[in-house]
Image (tube, rainbow, N blue to C red; front, side, top):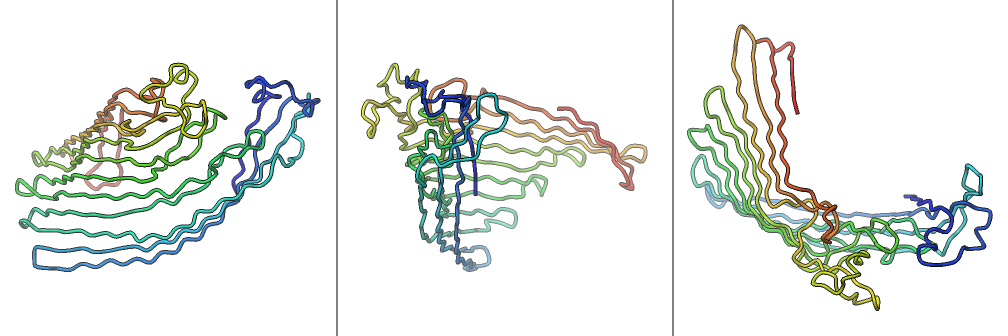
Amino acid sequence: AIQVHLPWTFDIPLFLFGAPPNPANDGYSAISYGGPLVENSKWTSLFFSTTWNVSDTFRINVGGRHQSIDKTGTENPQLARLPTGGSRYEPLSAAGPPVSGRIDTSDFLPEVGFQWDASDDVMIYAKYSEAVKAGGFVKSPPIGGAIANPFTYDNEVAEGFEAGLKALLLDGRLALNASYYDTDFTNLQVTIINNFNGQFETHNAAAAHTTGFEIDGRWAVTDNFSVGFAGSFGEAQYDNYIGSSCNSLEAKIAPTATCIPDPVVPGGFVLDAAGMTLPYAPDWVINLQPEYHTSMAGFEISVSANMVFSDGFKIAGVGGDPLSEADSWKRMDLRLAIAPADGKWEGVCAAF
């Protein structure tokens, strides 16, 4: 059972909407809405995987998973009151009727891949797979006894394609992995802030995609000096998502291209996030790890660095609030290590 409470000073939620003080709260300085969410879940899975060696250099990998998920959840809205001048909340009392929901789904998730040894040092592959992330129940303090609506969020489904290569080049001195990926999401699970109650809630975006290119590896430049590297370049965007309600600033200038009339609530406005970038999804990230190693006077000495360079990204939400965006950034970590040849101890000095 998950129990979350949100304390409010006396009548603030109602006062913000212009309501008069509630006589039922006379003698109390604060109220706390909350209640337990009781969840039960049952998962059943059956999976298989096999490899067909078509030839000495070509393989087909086939697999799949049949997965059944059955989850039920019930929330009991409760209310606690803090007497004026008191230091403890009085015992909980019911603030509304219980609300129940159910997630019941059964899916078959296939996976198929191809591998070709182009040479002794180069393998080229392609792979298609599907995955599912179980839905659940929105847990936020039920303000005024009103539980989040909708109370449930759906399963997230992903269909992905990946192709690339794994290689040893330059007489084995360069290990290189490179891949292209393209993943489509249905009912992507996203965390939003509900502007009506100020709570973070999990909802579903109708559709989204990520696509791009990744590379990583390590190059032994000399016997003493090597460079590790990694990079990703791509995009991650909503394809179809009518998001949370517009905030007060956006609503004042609505309708706009992104703040459109709410199709459900008359007079309301919601964000149309189609084409917007997903949170925590920079367009590019580059990582370099140079390292120099040598032996001197019976000691093993290594000097290394970890350098990360990243494009800016959204932190949360789908609006244009600059406070929810992080600028491009970089970080460098330096490390000096000294150890005797027998390796019985090691001294490390690091800077960040």
